[in-house]
Amino acid sequence: MSVATDQPVTSVPGTDLPTADVLRRHVQARYDGFLADLAQLVAVDCGSWNAEGVNQVADFCAERLAALDFTVTRMPARADDGRPLGDIVVARRRGDLPDGRRILLLAHMDTVYDDGTAASRPLRIEDGVAHGPGVTDDKGGLLAGVTAAAAISDSGRHPYAELVFLLTPDEEISSDASRPALEQLAAEADYALCLEAARENGDLVWARKGIADLHLTVSGRAAHSGVEPERGANAALAAAHLVVALQGLNGQWPGVTVNVGVVHAGSRTNVVCAEARLELEVRAATIGEMDAALAAVEALAARPVVPGTSVSVHRPAAWPPMAPTDEVAGMLAHAQEIATELGFEVTAVATGGAADANLASAHVPVLDGLGPVGGGDHSPVEWLDLTSVVPRTTLLAALITRLGSG
Image (cartoon, rainbow, N blue to C red; front, side):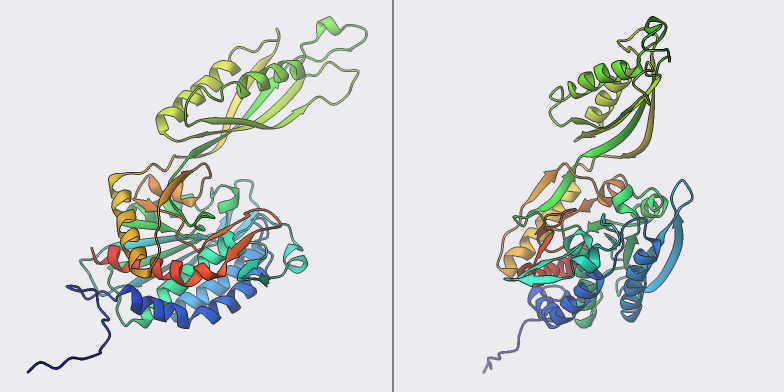
């Protein structure tokens, strides 16, 4: 005679993986701690150039991850001009499956906000929505990663070969100092999950445009503007024509945008302008489109309209496009299956914004937008939907286990 039991299912059938429901219970149990930690982090001024503030966030993360048996290392970072940045934090935890997969989690500790913003806009919660500087970009995502790792640990299983957490101090200023470490860790990983916020409608991100920053210097010839202007070559005029031509590149390729965002020219009204400087960015969905757009910029720079002027082009920073691949589609399929088990649906979109995911995508399949739902990034109205914290962090935890198990 068989005896019925009401024992809950704790493993995915046919595997030793914790079920999404088990992970959800563990995430829910840590929700109050998530809120307390969020208030603590939002109270820290950690703009990219505030090394001390970023390192306060690094201290917090190192402590939390060490308590979860991660081995934590920190590397001092500096910008190209020698200015100190916060530390790069790498945390590693060996799993139970030597033949499993290595999962890389990506989050950043810096924000775009000036010192004093944290005091003027502390964490505020209204109608289930949290507001504050960095609340969604990327403190909410960072905490989701820590909480997901804790929930997996609470389940008593670690079904992966290794879980690696990379926390960068300079994502908002291009991740130049973090790039070597990021690319090395990505090359060692089997999958990468980026903890930027889900889109405002809950979408994940499976593609991002690449970005190239360019500085164009227009050189002319100075002369007295009243006595002998004909001896001059007006760099400001050449720059003005160049701005119009560069903006005219928009629409020539489906996935390309060009924006001249900064223009500097001249010093006095009675001098024919001898030098002007343009700063622009090119964004493209594919490497082919990026190459074509950059070639067009170089061609325009080689043919200045004003006689006697010349243009030099410098590329200080670039991020490759993050394009959807079959492997990324497979990661998305796992995420969608988990979300269905949790009672909601997810889709993925392409976005024009770049992130550390772009740099990783050249080496490893990446799925992004795995933080909670949020929006208003880089603005006084930045927000995080607190009702999304438990389901989205559970999704992240379950995705780590399923990808990690291979």
